[in-house]
Amino acid sequence: MKKRLLFLFTSGFCATPYRKYIVLTLCICGKIRYLFPLLLFFIFIFCKPTSVSAFSSENSLFLPVVFNESNGRADEARKRAIDFESPAYFPSEWEEVEAQYADVYNMSKSTGNEIQHADALSNIADIYDDIFRRTIPLYTQAVEDEIMFARDELIQTGFTNFFPKYLRNSDKTAILAMKQYEAKDYYKARNTAADALNDYRILFIGAKAFLVRQEIINRGFSLNNSDNFVKADEAAQRAIYEYEAGNKEAAKANAEEALFRYNLLLN
Image 1 (cartoon, rainbow, N blue to C red):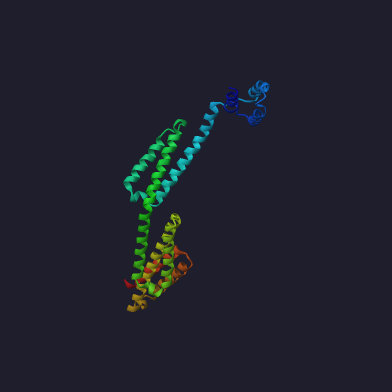
Image 2: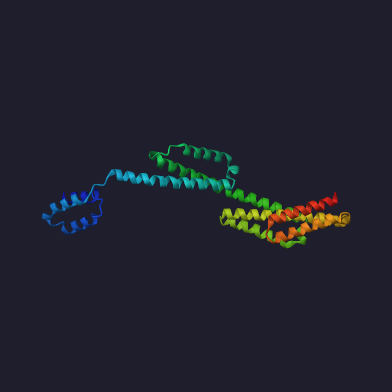
């Protein structure tokens, strides 16, 4: 009986810094019977009952943290799926999870259903992640197809026979993008793939300008409007300079100007 009382006082009622000293004292003096009343008095003086409201208060502080973590995870999973075009690949599933997402936000955020709210958001995050995982192979294949189309289009112009180093550099960028996708570094891979595609497209504009220039020379039209021909050549030279300097947008703008001026000579 005494052991049960001691356990009750030291566990259920003691929530003070003195608890460890009380337990130590009990261990030392537990067999000395006449000290038992004194020990009980000591416990009542220095120990306070643990309030149930204290636990409720701690839970009320903890629940918003759980909700915020679940909310953040759901938002992150949703953004990632959108960034890689999951809605386009799985439209019906996307509409369904979006409806669930909206329903959760319409739920009351009172303390009474915070846990339910957090659980629902966690489940929704799992669904977004699942759609994203199934999207990636499709998205990667689409990007690869787009890059290969642009590359083939460039090669067919014959431009790369005269300037093979430009093709090699663009190919290195495209290969790097595929490796990054395989390594699941998806955002970096997406940016690298965009760079490779942009390179091929800029080179294609330059290739068309180069071919038109060759036609102008073969037909002897450069003598008819030498001033415009010189300006077109200057724009073409600027395009090459900017491209090699890594200023791709400036290179594209100058290549387009060169192509425009060369075409004027044929019309």
